[in-house]
Amino acid sequence: MKGEIEVNGAKNSALKILSALVLSKEKCRITNFPFIEDTRRMLEILEDLGVRIFIDEKNKTVEADPSSISKTELNETLVKKLRSSMVISGPILSRFGKLRMPYPGGCVIGKRPIDMFLDGYQKFGAEIAWDEQGFTLTAKEGKLTGAHIFFPKVTVTGTETMMMTAVLAEGKTVLENAAMEPEIVELANYLMRCGAKIKGAGTSTIEIEGVDEISGGEFYVIPDRIETGTFVMMGLVTGSEIKITNCIPKHLGAVLPILEKSGAKLEVGEDYIITKESKLVANSVTTHEYPGFATDLQSPYTLLMTQAEGLSIIHETIFEGRLFFTDQLNTMGANIIMCDPHRVVVSGPTKLYGKRLTSPDLRAGITMILAGMIAEGKTVIDNIYQIDRGYEHIEKRLQALGADIKRVKEK
Image (cartoon, rainbow, N blue to C red; front, side):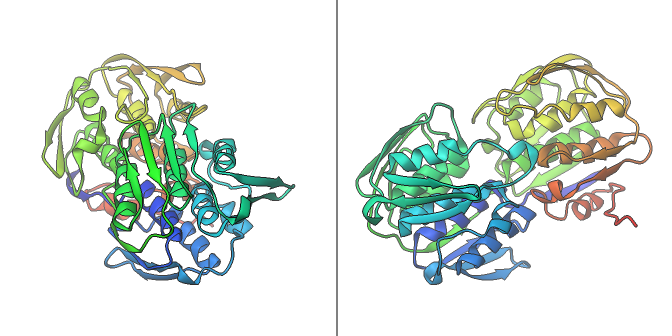
């Protein structure tokens, strides 16, 4: 394969700005917007609430007017399609003082406990009423109050959600052991431009002084660092010279140094990365919160190690069960031994052969595409909705590089 591939806007940044715009009564204009399944589901949730949405896919732009929100009850059908719908609960509760929400859905790897969110809302002074279908949150006297929240475990969505919730809460909020991802900094910068008072975003302690209201504004979705890392590993695993453009290499944190230690030959610029044919050597990795090696890039890295010389240990510390997809790589000819739900030993290099696979989640799904690209014969991947959740028109973009890939509808 050869050519250039442009990185789209960050999925995780776009989802959070769609939630944050609920805090204001004024319009928000979002550029470099990724039109993927997850963001489309969030747009549907917003429209159901009464937000007026104007979409320009050609120019990757979305405009949203939240002044017409007419209800505070989230649609059960829509919420069950998207685990990330939980992040919008904080802004709704903070602005309106109440929220009715069914239990969220999402892919298997995404089924994480919501206790952390609810515990946080209680610290802000919200009361919770449970039933079989979901829960109702109510702020005492219609207004949340500032809180001191220490996250027992570093959490990106938890940090972002509590930060957004605190913007309109009365008084001061302190978030400790906060996540430090670039998407958090971008979200905080937008909120501050709109009138929020936030200090410390990008560090482990964030302080928010509540304000009565914030304005709308314009938000540019930064390039997706996970897509960037995925395309870099695609170039390396296929032995191709590919230029990845519209990216921010420094946002990859530990990923590039680890790849270079694995033998990767890369040309890294301010906004591009070029992969070159490399002799890969085994290099163990442990996933870690940012700026460590991202858990979302563990799956393609595991595939990369099947083509590297020697033994490597992949240690997944963030999500339980995220290594189970390696069974399907083994059916293709990989030599991967699972030690426990968090660790596998990969022996390489091994030749892979085309098989019929099923995508269990978003990141394992894109890894199966990469595996199919280097396997001998034809690979068929089912349940590709999981891949579409994070990668826009992936088959067309890979076809432009020379990949033999197509989307099919079976009879």
